Amino acid sequence: MRALIAMLAIAGCGAETIVFGQLDEGAPAALIVLDGDPGAGILAFEPLPRRVTIDRLGDRAVDILTYDAPFGALGVEIHSGRLVTSAEGAPLPLANHWLHRAQGALTLAPVDLSQLDTVFQGVKLPGPRCPSLSRVSTIEIPDTLGIHAIVPADPTTAILGALTATAGTRLFRLEITAAAKIEDLAETSSAARSIAGFRIPNDEDQTWTGRADGQHLILERRASEGALIESRRIPLVLELGLRRMTGTEVGGQLVILFSTPNVWGRVDLDANTATILGRTTLENCTDGLGGVLTLEADGTGVVGFTNGDLVSFTLGTDAASTITTPLLPFDPRPCRASYARDPASGREVVMTDRSSSAVLYWRSRPTDAWRSANEPTLTARALTFVNGALIASAAGDVVASLAFDGRPDQPPSICDGEPFAAKVLDVVTMGDYVLVNGFAATDGTVRIIWYRVGG
Image 1 (cartoon, one colour):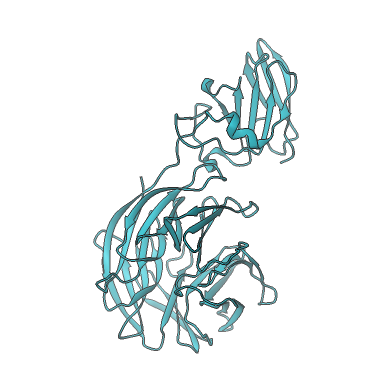
Image 2 (cartoon, helix red, strand yellow):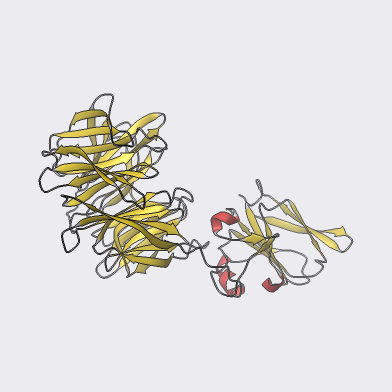
């Protein structure tokens, strides 16, 4: 959108019209404040029309704030064409343009946006919807040292990949209901000591698990009830076990990626091959947990290793044509970093562990600068979004829910926290629920707990 220009024109009968020019298609949203008095009601427009007619405008002062996103994306509530405000809450969202006409003046002039909070310090918006966490059920996983993979298979079913004391890796089918039913799929591999998995969105027969035995990557595609549909044995020598897998259709072709604590790569199902696309050269400085791997339909994504190394990528046809760049200019490098992206809004969040505190980074769009805030009560072990709410691991063996307001410069508010009775290792979104996986409890039991996110 080009620079905003507006002029006043007499419309007659005591009304005047504000005419906006040099707008490509009009701002997606705009607010108009008269006489600098929010108490009189702030007019809201979505989108901003070419002309706005205001009765008895006369010599009154006028402030016009325009935004490049609709009010819903800004977390702003509108009723009967006016901004909904409250006695306490969040400040006005940062505008993209601000024009002001002083009382009696003939023209509108741009205003420095840094003055917005000062000029409108009395304008408060209702706080963000602060989601609670309600425990639905808990399930104990038998004969298990730990859960390495939670793969949503359908809205109420997940495939669990476990490491056992007696049979290497084992698969379970978990029903995400209050009854908390778990079924042993009797699928074990004594040679494989690591397992990961993923699901292709909107396809119930595209639930994949992968196991590594040091010489091969064994890929298995399953139906939502756990039945095996196909199996691939792909030659792949890995020094360390699988940490993450993901996949989606890119340009009409199924793309499958994998990562370990020190490398990441791509699987070619047609050729039955796997190619290493990149590796980290940094030494591990943590307990080897975590890892990040995401892939979008445009071939972009993020890969993160267990040493805090975190990069964004754009896939090419091979390693040489795949572009990678550091996601954040960490200095000093953290020992652990987790990442999540809200599929609805596009907001990205990174959490890193430092010596005495976690640091939260966020941005609303890839073109925005990253912002950061210290979060001493959170940890960088796990992040996910559930219906716009951020779910994070927290200190003291707790899982927490957080909410962003409409201000991209403001960190999220911590809304709720629920004890897990062990360190949280992973959080996985399934509809309105979040599945929480962690270390074994003090009694040696491995549990999966799921919570409803809302309220």
